[in-house]
Amino acid sequence: MKPPWQNSLLGFDLQELTAIVEEMGEPSFRGQQLFEAIYRQRIESVEEVSTLSRELRRGLDRQGYSVGSPDIQRKFTSSDGTIRYLISFADGQTVETVWMPEGDGGEAGDGTESDLPTEFSTRPWHRATICVSSQIGCAVDCQFCLTALLGMKRNLSAGEIVGQVCAVLNDQRVFPPEDRTNLVFMGMGEPFLNYDNFIKAVRLLVKGVGIPESRMTVSTAGIVPRIYDLGAEHIRPKLAISLNAANDELRDLLMPINRKWNIAKLITAARDFPLRSREKLTFEYVLLDGVNDAPEHASQTAELMRGLRAKVNLIALNPGPGIDFRTPSDAQVLRFQEILTRAGVPAFVRRPRGRDIFAACGQLKQTIEIPENLSSVH
Ligand code: SAH
Image 1: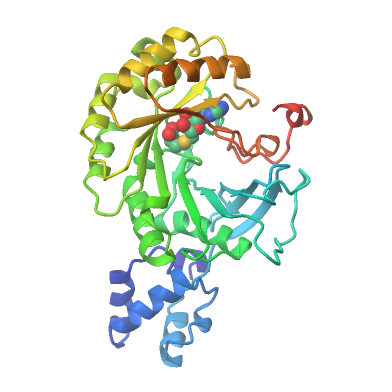
Image 2 (image 1 turned 180 degrees about the vertical axis):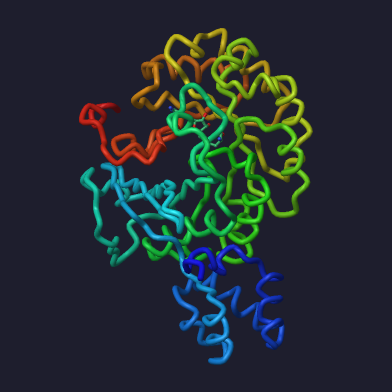
């Protein structure tokens, strides 16, 4: 018999669940009940689905089907309230998912690992963002990113992508849409190299878990054909593109994927992307001291943004072992931002979250030991 998680119903859509119950001789509306129980109520065992007949519950059990989210193996809490979760799957592989609360109370936490469940009498945050992983490791090999050093282990299934979100929501006792939750597909991996599972997970998170698509953003290193695919989806997150360099010579070096789809192709795809009313594209730009942060780079970036409905998110490099770049000074970051703003391009500096626990952008690498010297980096 397969281990329970491998036969998990988490990851099945309404149609698939309906087919399962119909095959067991049940009416099709039982599929809807099962769907609601799995994704909206997030029940932990088939036995708990009180809307289903006892017979059906037994039947599902007998066939080895299970429900429930994957295990939280470790939890690291940052001094800024960010929590990095290490989540494990049936084959023993782990992935990281990050919880980022916003608002008063979000600064709680003592920078140490905590195994205790989070106990909130009243919610200390107004909204929160979950950073979701799409693959174990990554194949894209961006030179400044720690996840790249892991190499590519495997894709996550749709159920595993949804499951990590459910594990965090359960731990935080959060129920969307009443509890306002944003999702960013900006964790480990390149979502567009696991496109089918990623987009299926999005649909389950929207229709099942209840997180509106307008509160979701997916980030890509620039897998151009999948940008067109995303544009054609009925249900889709907003799009962010990791630019990180504004000329091909530099981008070829920093992001080898640029040799396959260069800046011209990327910007054409961005121009062709069918934006909804009031929607904007986001371009992310990781600033590397003395490498891509000169005034001319800012001007080139502004030039690329011309005519696009877009904003630029600037991220000062988050450091890590094995990464040979330096973090620019605040003054350098501000100078870069100012050039963009003066050129009429909205530009924002993304505040690093959870750098002290290796939870910030580009730092997800299943790190268990946190180097002493890192807690002093801010
Ligand atoms: N693979 C996708 C999803 C990951 S998003 C993508 O590349 O877009 C992670 C974001 O963090 C990307 O915008 C990336 O450029 C940025 N990033 C990677 N390494 C970083 C680092 N060391 N410091 C700051 N940002 C980093």
